[in-house]
Amino acid sequence: MILQYSKMHGLGNDFVVIDLVRQRAYLDTVTIQRMADRHFGIGFDQLLIVEPPEDPTADFKYRIFNSDGSEVEQCGNGVRCFARFVYEQQLTYKTKIRVQTKSGIVEPELGANGWVRVNMGQPKFLPEQIPFQAEKAEELYSLQLKDAEISIDVVNMGNPHAVTLVDDVLTANVATIGPQVEAHERFPERVNAGFLQVISRNKARLRVYERGVGETLACGTGACAAVVSGIRRGLLDNNVDIELAGGMLNIAWTEGEPVWMTGPTATVYEGRFDLRYFQS
View 1 (tube, helix red, strand yellow):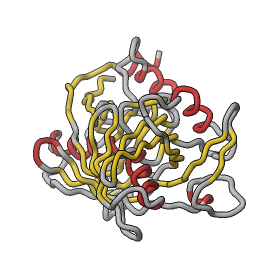
View 2 (view 1 turned 90 degrees about the vertical axis):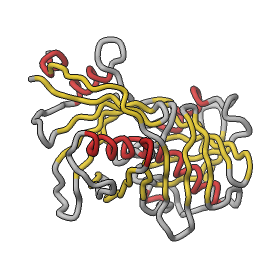
View 3 (view 1 turned 180 degrees about the vertical axis):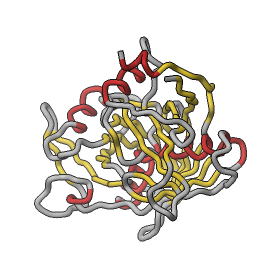
C-alpha cells in the first residue's frame, strides 16, 4: 500500500503528516516505531494523522503519535503544522479551523508566511488534572530524583508538563534530569520535563525533554506551560517571547483565559512510501 505524506517542522520539532481523510491505512505501534527511525525509516519526533472529525462542530480530527509509538493528547508545534498541512493539501479553504484532539478542541489560525496562531485552551493545575500524585494542590512541589531534589510546577496544556527553573538552559543537565522527571512514579502517565530560564519580564528560554521522544528542538505545549508557570510565579508578564533551540514562539496568557501560541511552520518536502516495508 502506497501512502502520501508531508515532512514538516515547527522550529525544528519535526513531523510526518499523513492524510487519512482521502487515504486509508492502519498504523500500529511497531509500524510507527519503524517509520520514526532516522536511519532505517523516514524519521520524525511525532507522526500527525488527519482524520474526519467525530465531533460535528470540528473540521478535522487530529491524532499524535510519538516516535516510540505512544499516542499523546496534544502537540503545540504539531497543531500549527497540521493547520498548514490541511490548507496546503486543499482539505479545507478555511484559514481558521476547529480541530478535535484527544484533549479537546483547539483552534489554529493560518497567517502570513507560514505563521500560525493557536488557541490552546485553558491550562489546568490540579494534581488530578495532570495527573500527578500529591496530597493537595500547591504552588510548587518538591520532586526527589536519584541524586537531587528539584522544585517543579505542574501544568496540563492538553498534555502533562513539569516545569523547573534553571539559571542557564545551556548548562542545565537535561540529559540526566529529564528522563528521571519524565518517568517519575508520581506521574502515572509520564510527563514532559521543561527547563525554564527567565531572561526578562517578557523574554525566556526553554529546553524540553519530551515524553516518549527525548529532548527536541522545540515543544509548543511545553512553551505554553513554561510561560504560564512563569506568570503564575510572578516572574513573567502576560506576553512572552520564548526562545527554544529551534527558534522563537510568542505565548500570551491572562489568568482565567485560554493560552495563545503564535509561531512559524515549514513544509520540508512531500513524499510517498510503501507501508508494507515498515510492516515486514
